[in-house]
Amino acid sequence: MVVGLREFAHRTGNGSGTPVLDESNGEELMRVQPSVAVALGNGSLESPGTLYITSRKLIWLSDVDMAKGYAVDFLSISLHAVSRDPEAYSSPCIYTQIEVEDDEDEEDESDTQSTGALDLSKIREMRLVPSDSTHLDTLFDVFCECAELNPEPIEQEEEEGEHNWVFSADQMVVGGGAEEDGEWPISQSPTSVIGLSIGDEGGLAQPMLELQINDQRFDDAEEMVHESETKDH
Image 1: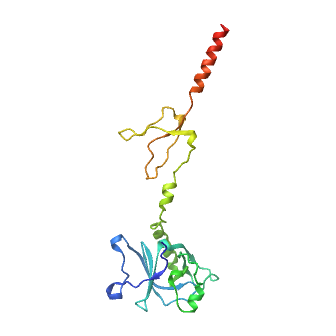
Image 2: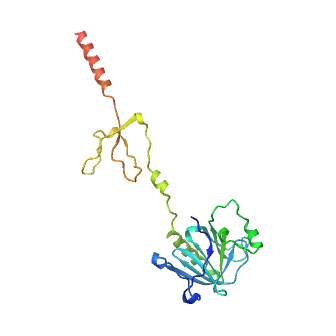
Image 3: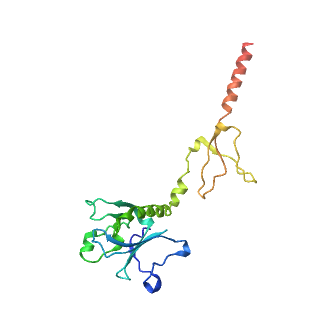
């Protein structure tokens, strides 16, 4: 589930200190950057605040309004980059793109901002503007480090279907069951082994699939040759 951007106001010290982290689940504070302004979507810059980068998410807390703050998980950030092009934005900044839930009735960002009812769950872009632009490269490096700590989760269906090989039923037959000691039966002829299949329950299917050769054809051919030689003599 995509969480996206959300409000954050959990501070220590009766709501006036640093953000409360999920330390019980291993969340750590990676960097604190004061005097950072934020712009959401196409909106204007808000009053400067403090940027907290943790091992799980970004947290921006206003220095003016103690009840105001935003947070976004690194898993919801699809792109981050340093922007210094004045044609792209008026101030050097860290530019981020945020994943949001698909919504058929989704309103345009500019429409929600014009009415004053800003829906954070629909914000797709965020710019972080430090008062000192020389910190941009350092912030970018911390972003990269934390992004590596939060890789995209692998879907279970992809894991299960990754090694499911399919063979024609008339080309092979399943061999006998596994031995009691847990070893798989292995064909004495390496050329007859087709492959192994990953079972639906996550383990290797114990029987090996082998190409069956009808040896009766060769027995009939040998008898015909023997009868021919007998007649010749």
